[in-house]
Length: 97
Image 1: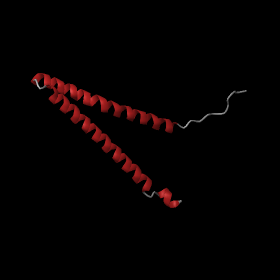
Image 2: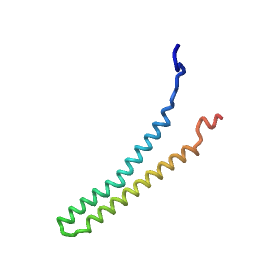
Image 3: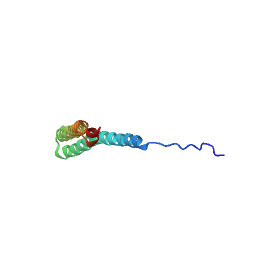
Image 4: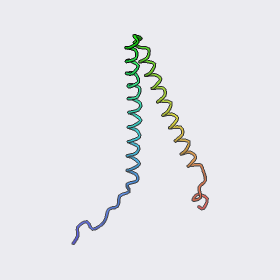
């Protein structure tokens, strides 16, 4: 006699998609936080060498932050356009149905 003879089947595609979403979100968050800080520190070092304290630190921080926000918006807009095209474009399966 075998206990639990019924096999349980799991669909791992949903879990894989969820894990990919978490990974993408984490990398975006790290990029959004770490990159401007590193560039701000580089600007602080340049300012210390030149004696122009807040100039390069603020400029590099703000330019980097602006670029990352713009890049994330462009990636998001492209992803949404691609998904909209997939939903609205006729496919072979839809035409046969």
